[in-house]
Length: 286
Image 1 (tube, rainbow, N blue to C red):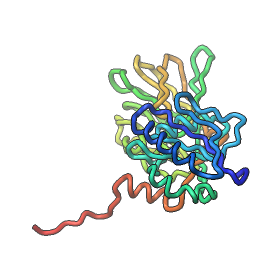
Image 2: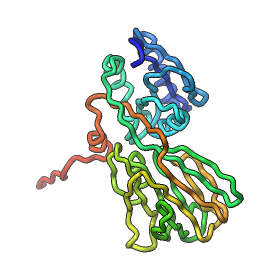
Image 3: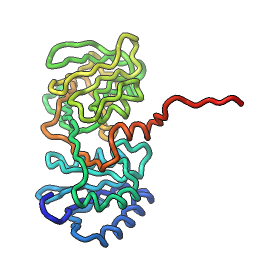
Image 4: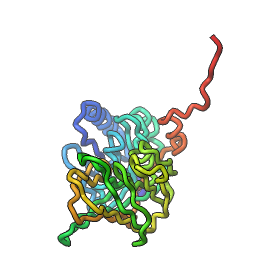
């Protein structure tokens, strides 16, 4: 840490009663702590960390709140720790009570910062303009409101790979592998791997299976025909309609998402808890 004082930024943007009551409770707790400075808060507006000395960003909410926060940090990524007021919480895996109980250790820097792959998605329009988006979980090309299947051509480093026919295609980071990709039949990737997983959504051909590739490549997606309703979705939060002649490129970002983990909270312990990995069911005779 930059000094003997812990410099915090707080993100509690979700308007739900749970998050706002949690922020009120956390605020009262932090006011009583010595050697702690709150240098930025994002309660009603987006977080801006430009030019600020921040040791740790505390995000109240679920994993979606963390996805938004890391995009708002842009190139100024700081370690993020999540207090879960959502549901599953693979990233935001601490309760408010656990955060308070472990705060002395957190203040002393007794946490691990694990760096995770982020991506840049560029939507290239047929008129030569483009839009760039930063993401942590996944890029999805979805048939959405389109009627019938869509065909998506995949090229990796400009080499044609295959054409997927179905309801869409997901290109996910390891962090995102527990999200939409998992529900579509994709594998779980350990979150610190330097890889992407390509997962088809309801593919027409049973031979189309999820594919894992190294992250130091460029994925290009094109559609021979763009039906009305086909949508590009970033992290489930940014949506753009696709037009005829548009293409999409996904590549690794030049910086990483930094997740702070306290002792006792690991990737596998989180999977065990959140996915209910309790081992074999125990049957007994009645």
